[in-house]
Image (cartoon, rainbow, N blue to C red; front, side, top):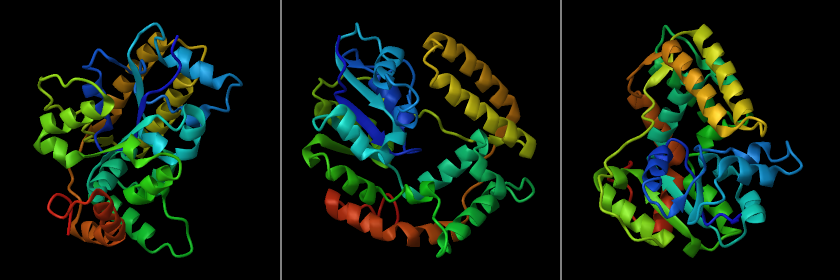
Length: 299
């Protein structure tokens, strides 16, 4: 039975990884986990046989094909990936305008209710104003550590960490906006990188759009507890995946009633502030990719 990953999509969060996961599942030659996001490196020290738990819990090892994982949380762990899965694993990076990615991430946290979001929550002001406060606080934190998810949009800095352990030829880079404008071309280049024959089909799908936020502070706190419960169920090796799926289906139904649709747009002021924060990393990425991203991201 095979226990070796052939490829990993390691990032970036809120850049279309759920859509990518759905696309790859259309290919019979590709074997993905029973659920998206195993979060392996967050719980690997929970069990003495954690790597066996990873394989036996999330994969059908009787299947044949190319084994892979789409894990946007893995962008924090280049050395752990190298040490666990070896230097030959292929890496996929999917990147989105870092400002739009950050706003999408902030909105997701207003749904999931992780504790760090609580100080910014104020239903009276709306999501856009909450985000304004988040940006201002992280832009002026000379004596405070910047929120790591704010920094996460500095893609080139992350890629440089991976280049310490993996050759560039083992990496494939996707711009999410390219997928939106030409999904067939983007998918064709990806599957050729992975070594498969491209299949013509409708790729114009967008998963996990994330336009729901918690209705109020009580719902936010409750959703935070549901997020913790989801993590505990996901990482408990004694709970079969089929049972986990049933339980998380119940969790999602609760979340549906504790959240509401919200389509607040980011303020121009925050967009300009974020441009200043990300511009140097964007320039470095453009040099690395040998491509001008100004027309699809920002000047």
